[in-house]
Image (cartoon, rainbow, N blue to C red; front, top):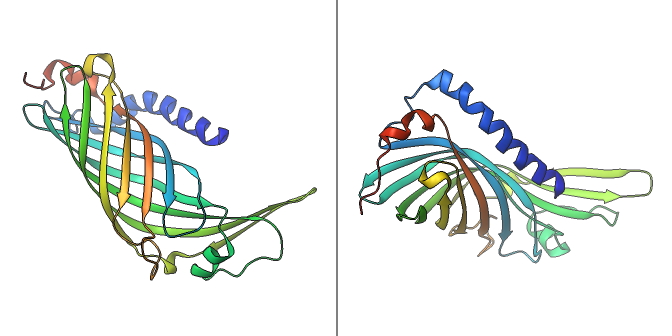
Length: 236
């Protein structure tokens, strides 16, 4: 857990310096008075229904976003989460059977980790006090699923990875809602939370095996300083 938190903090620190590099490559083309581009990262606290395992695995989510002004206080928020991991820990024997995993002879722990490309499409309403609420849908493409077996002994640690991508549905679709606050009087980074409820089964043939996750996030705008004076302000 501590390592994952350090990775998130490192991402935030590196992203702040990377604004200059990205601006050199893209200039101001990705930012305009009506469009904001930036990096999004944070911590996923996920759960998968349909399994007996109830222990969440905190994972990192990283990607980029576009915040597009529509009309008055309404915006369209979208982008691509290129690194999105969901999962559950301490799979039971029944869970392993559902995933066609042969149990190891030891007494270790089994974790299910799924990797997705996720695209959210959210309608966002921004208040004058720089808070916002949003809601919409999210679609994802599974590119890897693994069951990881970990057993610790006095002199070694055993790690065995079982690929289970073929046991899972590739497409994941669901609803998403969230809220947040934009720092520096609406011109800085964004702190927020989003909750995702999947409508599709993750595991083939297993009803109600849907993803559910709470995402604690930070958005870092890229090249926004140059466009601050041109930013579209929400109408009263």
